[in-house]
Amino acid sequence: MKILKLALLLSTLVTLEGTLCASEPKLDPKRIINESSSFLKEREPEMTEEEYALFQKVVTMLSSNPDFALKLLEAMMAEKEQPSPAFQFILGNAYYAAGKIDKSEANYRGAVTRYPTFLRAWVNLGILYYSAGRYAEAVPCFSKAVELGDRDSSTFGLLGYSLQKQGDLVSAEMAYMQALSGDPGNVDWKEGLLGICVDGKQFTRAESLVKSLIKDKPSDTRYWITYANILLAEGRKLEATVLLETSSGTGAANLEVLMMLGDLYAEQGLVPEAAEVYTRVVKASPDVGGQKLLHYAGVLIASGRLEEAHKVLAMVRAGDLGKGGLELLQTRADLFAAEKKWPEARHEIEELLKLDPMNGRALISLGRAYNAEEDVARATLAFEAAYRIQGSVYLASLELANIELKNRHYSKSVEYLQKALAIERTDAVQDFLVKVKTLASKES
Image (cartoon, rainbow, N blue to C red; front, side, top):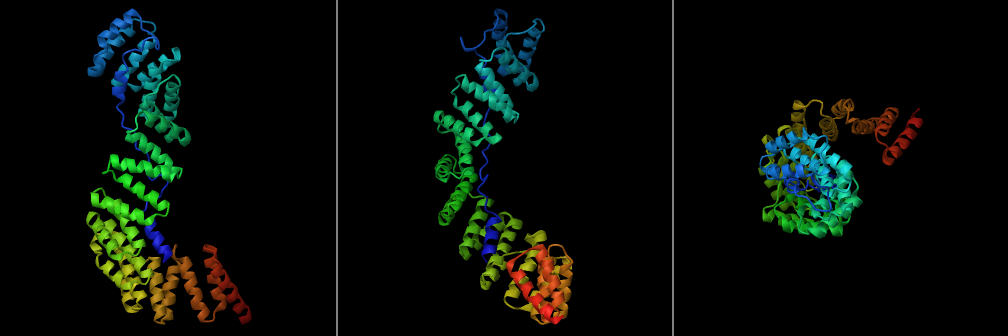
């Protein structure tokens, strides 16, 4: 029973590690790069008079008509041996705005190589790498900008995200903290820090952050799911249930939230509530909802709550399941077997085997039904068929070992037990084998 309950929960509950991967920060790189076109006096390289004159002509075009601005800049480049680092920076901006990333990178690189303290060139180069998903290359650029005195929260935040993508969570946490100190309401930086706290099992900090995120964006289902998983990780099952109920009541619940809530109800024995939620899942996604109801019925059968299992199975329509119709037949057979209604159980299994003759689990169930009716010959045939199917060899070996033992074929029983132990070694089967070997030695 406990194993089945756990399996039911694990079928939908999100594992805590990686529950909320930090979403990519919302960034308009072109805006940042375009806005960086004016120069910081005494902190950055200066252009020549000729360059500055051209710069004044094209600066307004960089955002409105980058292609034309680029043509003007390239025309001047053809007349010069090498532009200044400041002009290379402007060229990098222009190429970026025009979508020519390789040339943009080359010019930013040239600017910082020739003028290593060029802070905004480092930032823009970092943004270029970040936008391309080249996080390992973005990190040293943002780090250099911080070293040169950049205290902008977005620089710290992008550095934190890039570090997080590289797996350097300690440094990423520090960067996110710096970013939030300058922009405490930024959802991106909160989310990044939340992911780090969850991964590090810092649940108290994670709970505080996720509460803040839910307040900021109550319709974002990911935050509700993350909060529920934090509570479950701390063993606060009832609070997780109430939280998901609240999410459902506010309209923020999606299919994943409903499945989690249904599983929590089922695990706590709240049958009507679980059935109601799973029925809602069926309406939203018939295939998924039907499978959840079947799993739930299996838990009820294993726990001996057969009347309730009948009610749950009555909610399942075979047409909603697709290939899952086989599982419906198997679950019905399991219910009839639990009620010791062997002819009914066999009927369901026989229907299943018509559709899937090599279904090992069904053959095991058929053999057990025949065995219960003391039709040992047919039971043996069913178990022998299951024995030849990968995945059902272990159970078939144990069933055949029991039949051979009852028939006093001790040596044959030993062979089947040894086969089972070769697949999965357990103390119970090992002890059983020792006793049967004793009988076999006396027989010989």
